[in-house]
Image (cartoon, rainbow over all chains, first blue to last red):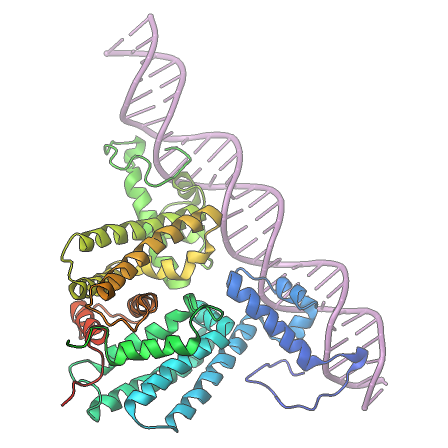
Length: 215
Length: 215
DNA sequence: GATATCCTTCCGACCGGACGGTACGCTGTG
DNA sequence: CACAGCGTACCGTCCGGTCGGAAGGATATC
């Protein structure tokens, strides 16, 4: 495997058998999964490469065969998450164009991805700033794309008269994103309320407001 | 000074002159302030004690005279923030008891403290998990007190019929907290909108909702 | 009030350990 | 025999924390 571990080198390479019956693609995966769990619990800096390798029942040698550096692994994880985000966004954008429906979908999608990609999300928000230079810029760019999608839908709703005009779309978007992103701190997949139910309540709160309807 | 740097040993000790014209309370402050700036930019783990001392134009020796450990400093910062939060909460609770007013005040207060205690807030959310055992429990306990205040006000509003009953107060609270807490990621004190204006829009969004009033 | 002693504040050199990364060797398939 | 996959041993560095000491006002003792 090339020393550059750029955005998925040749992703769908045919699964061939290697000496000793190794399965490199699988090895790479288990290293990522191991790191996901450790990073989520202890954070990036508090997790050593040795620990990651141990948990995957491998050695540092294997690690540095698959990744250029520890940062390279972090970037891989970030991009994995952002890629999933972007494809989901596109799906929503190609669906209904009713602003209220779209915002509801966006909330539901955000919360779902928090539940599904919990490790990724936690790491994304906690360790994003630890990426250096270009990597950080790239990740930030994609993150901005996601937020721009949020903002676009809200602004569109205002333009078309579905949302009140006295609220700045950017501020509303920040509020929306915050509500959803923050869920990684508390959302409990096995809790009493399903993720969909939480999403429904968030949507109700943001769209109709908390205030009781006039009696 | 005793080796234990527990919650402000003797806070209002008389400012006496020490050998060499030292002012220990001031030294301690500059170490904290130095750490605040560095932690906010680089994170706790990426900031060395040496850096903190350098920035305060002191040495590691001075640092370890004023703090038991690097963790002790982190705890000090966390408690400084939580203390300010708790007093502010009490102030709101002793004010108006109209649910809508209270929630609006809570939002305004949260955003204001994000603006004022930016360093503290950033560090609080990013490095909280790095505290060990008892320290973490203590900080978490106080954090829960703050969130309980939020939850109490929302639940009270539902009970008294001011807020709609089909939204789980806990979920609504999480949404509120998230909206406000997230602001540490983007809130720009010198931006076009004042903090109060942002708070007003958030309150409008949460209370009346985004949806345009029926024509 | 002069002297000796104490104690706080801070400095500077040092230590032990952990961690990211490297060099190289071994294995076995193509 | 070339080369991918992985193991092993090792290196340089950095960093949290320690330790002895210097400076000099405070305090006690006579």
